[in-house]
Image (cartoon, rainbow, N blue to C red):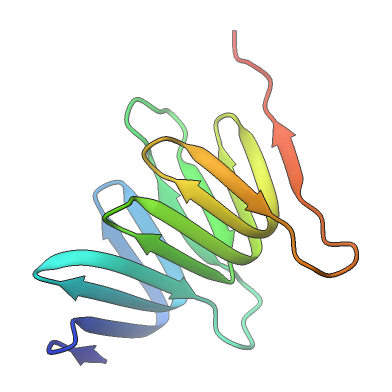
Length: 132
């Protein structure tokens, strides 16, 4: 569904969006544009889906892409921030992170992680060994 007046386009099914080195794949993707500029991309899984929404991006001067998955991914273009919610996972060269909510600064490579409120919800982090 495309609503040009509101600047919102919603795509359903097996959706894939590419912009430069960024790739987003999900069951449903909503793209919000204002003044001919990308504002945000919201990618989500379907209610009965077993797979997670996926984000990939190859940072400048990197050999390995940042890969993120979650039930809901919101990319805020002007801030270059990524919000991952629900079974959130993020993998980058320095290590991998998982929790209920991950906030990722795409330009600076900084991750903020929050656990859910349920008993047993836990933040998990793996630090990759330094390469010689």
